[in-house]
Image (spheres, rainbow, N blue to C red):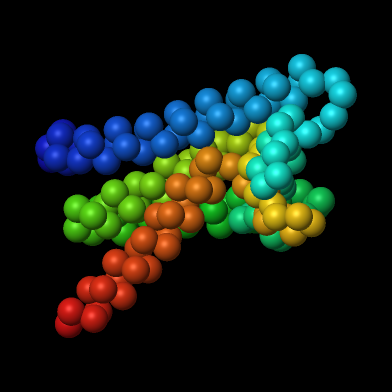
Length: 162
């Protein structure tokens, strides 16, 4: 039974693994760049895009950052439960939604590993216009956000058809 489940769903596991690896490689590359850069925290800059390493101990986009271990561990535990819930939802979803859930699982797994390894998540993509800067984020956040927004639109379209 377990073997048939993996055989039927291997492409989703590969997709999750691909997202996880791309996220790990990008984070490790930026961390390495930051360690070898002596002059500035800013690794790359342009008129609208910077690469600047920031360690995020909060949840999405630095929200709910706490210094206390209790709150940090509680948030990490909640994230683990959410990932398990998304895995369950993916198991019962249609093909398109399974890919969207897989995007969320792949990105969340990358950020969760960082929380366990570093006690924070390395964020480094800084989009800005003049003095307005968006929250600094990473590749995992991109996949999580695209997955969530696409699931919302998918659900809206399904409900519209009904």
